[in-house]
Length: 314
Image (cartoon, rainbow, N blue to C red; front, top):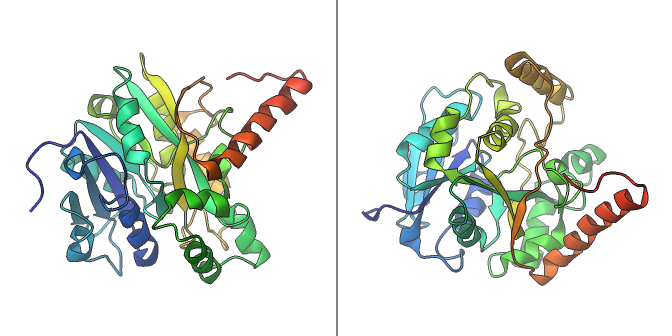
């Protein structure tokens, strides 16, 4: 039976035909894995966007009493409406969004999200994304040396269930944050805001109706950063790690024009080309040892720009 106390935070996770990946994702959001937070402080709202091979409700609820499961019949190929459905079902004072349920998160992400959400009246709490494997997954797949079997071996080798920060040792920064933490990000795949801010945005825009959503998550992030009085915070030392699952955006092998069409759709909807939000964030978080190599990389990117007399600020 779910808790009756209203949670501080509801995290909406959209899944589609990813039993292998979602099982790991949901475990990483469970009270058994998350540290420094009580189970009645947050809830996980799992929305299955019409999977042919769905998760079972009992399997989802087994992760904890703060988990709920919702299956959408006759779903759109885009996850936008599934996210909006989850917003409607969420009970929390604040909302978090994982539009791709194939992402394992680190053990302090809920704790630090809650800290960030309490710091300002209109906070946007963002996290960086990583890809499991030695480089961005699309490149690895195209070169033929990365697949689910390789990924399973990597995850087993680091025993991430016992030490989630070990994920940093087998990953690379995703394309949206490939220049490091101190340069603007294009999106965040574990993003947190107040409910009022989400409703003022009109939620996720269903006009982004491509399979996988096209740039719907990037559009949501841009529009959030345009909200008057908003404050962007970026959590260091935490993040989400994308698993290979055949998704049309990250793992596309056949549709090489997907991103071209996604950008064309964005321009048709917004009347302009997509651009990253150029904002200087407030940084919060901590420095687990495996994370430090990415801090060094990010600082290196800033120093290279400085040596070339290029802008080093947002």
